[in-house]
Image (cartoon, rainbow, N blue to C red):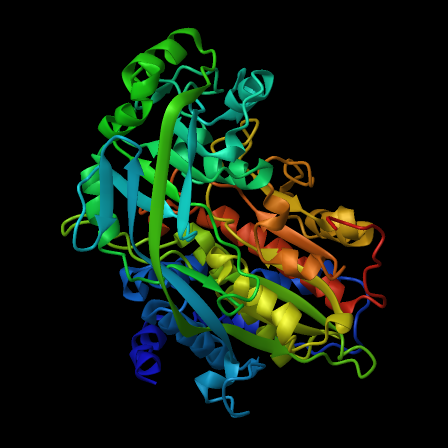
Length: 580
């Protein structure tokens, strides 16, 4: 309960701006009958309450250091849940959670608690047969290795040098194709790769990227690992972290920062340990010196290999004959909890009010940086997914105003802010698979919002007036058409870009946010997204970098689409198998 008392600060800071007298008069005209088709003037009257100023007012607080990075199960995440509950209460929306009384004044009534089981790292040791050993723990670390990820207790095997660990055919460079051509099986042992990509400098790639800058193989730390998870995991990964022009810190410095987080949250699961939880191979960052010791049997060094690849832009891959690496990972398990936040507007049509449109976002992020004092301490997550979360708040407030003026939706609308997305879509999976507050068979659509505040630097063309839409026409062509029609009818006129709307998209965005857990149950969904950027999961994801004007227009479009879905006579038909 202490966390909720702290939210008095939020309530004082977030007084909603009142409508003008002219707006109030226009919005107060009651509806004679429920509408089956969107009335543009009526929708616009409430749509216009979603403003850049209100979004910024929410986000500058929600993505502040006060919430400590909102990592799932932590104090910061629980304070953020309380803030959202307080906002819904202030709007007068009904609570739909399972964690409190039916009293709208009880913040817990908006919460859906769920149990979690954590596994956190306490250290690692990696040794080279006949060579040196490196240890990493909070108490003792030598600066030559750092445990980045993984919980498999032990891994042992030979070593394959896999170049930069990049598969970028469009850039004319593919280490994995080179290994396949050489009949090298990297999954049978350790994969040793260089960090980043062939670079001329920290700001200039040797690969033919569009703008000459480093690609997402360098700028997004998860790209290489995501490719491995998708195509085949080795017994472990060894990544050289200090041999690139982009490397700003030594492995020792990185190890010091990571050690501060040992014993932190770690990985989380809905399953108890031993109940189907996968053991993830260890991902270790290593120094150039340690990598050279592994490469010693080949007679080659990191510098030699880097120069050879960079000079020709041709992959160099080989089995490191005679090299053998063993790593042990120390972990501990624990139990904890997290919370989804759920509020709703009840439908006005007696025959349709049991059906529900779910508007969702995830409000968790990745916590504290572990940086030393004087550097940025918090991963604020302004775009990921503060942008989607404050958009949900503004959409909810617009519907609350409409209902108060007599224009309530025919179907119910649920506003669902989930936790645990960053840990594996856990909150949304708990909602759909374990405790669906609104029956899934009565859920007509999910409009999911995740990262709609920034410009994707790889977005094709010069027009930044876009939003990526993913999923709609692959499950429900009607849902897709409704969204397109609302975009035109209401004048938001965004480029509804389908760049990533394919299950064959190598980024796999179709399954990387919470819509996935609705889509797997054949519930039509649209995922609204504007792409990743250089601050994705970084300390630079701050509220001053958000494109608030465009964020407001995307929010207005989603509001209009939800309005149409909630008021039309028939629910959108499922017309395809979608991503299943």
